[in-house]
Length: 67
Image (cartoon, rainbow, N blue to C red; front, side):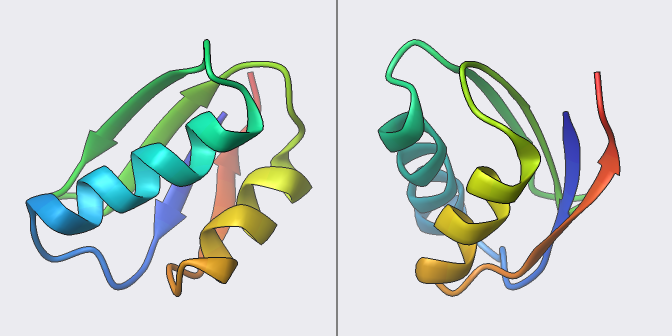
C-alpha cells in the first residue's frame, strides 16, 4: 500500500512513521520517501489501521494505492 503522509520533514519523522507502522506488524516492509512525502507499507494490516496509527503520531495520511 502506498500512502501520502503529511507533516514529514526530517529523519525523526521517518523514524516515527516507520515505528508506527511496525507497531502494527513488526515484520512489515516500510519504505519512506521523505522528499515526496510518501510511504510504502506491506504487512499484516489494512489501510485504515495504518492511517489510524499515523494519525496518532500526528502524521495525517491518505491511501494512494493498494497493493
